[in-house]
Length: 218
Image (cartoon, rainbow, N blue to C red; front, side, top):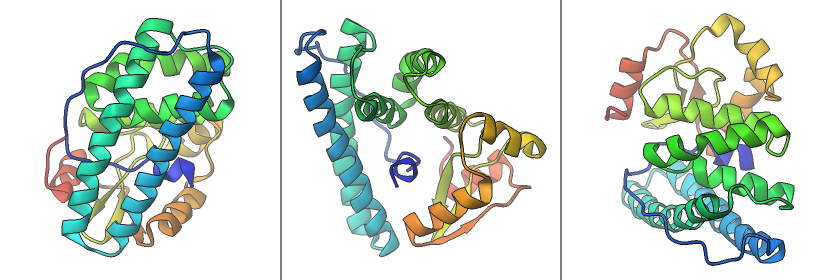
């Protein structure tokens, strides 16, 4: 479920300011505690949001999107301050290394662009799974109006969840395997169960058509 929640897209744009780091860089215990709290809020808010989306309640969906955006901003302020001051802390639990990825993955484009190199570095070191790197790379491409590479990103248009356009579909299965991602058919089935919605993958879909379906140019 956590991987699916990481792929939730198209929340209302906003900006965030990075604040000073308040926990000492070497206090691993306090950092783990703080990051676990951030993770719990992040994942719980997205689980609730997906549930409301499935109920097709536009007003409640909008309210939760705004609440989630505010929470994401607070999380990004902490993680941005942490990375600016300490770099990627050593000694974190695997779960909390993933938490840092989640917060970056849920940021706006300037935030993602700034901290993407941190995720890549940690993935190269084996601290962060390659699947996380693939996910955030696809998200950056999507948000810049480009085709994704690994097929990790979806968007909802009406009651249907769609796969964002993928570049070089013929090589997709091999690329996903190299990054530790499940086969595409298994992923689509997981998305279907997570969103309780119809899932479609139109392999001929263009970025322009996808943007039209979302009602916005990203």
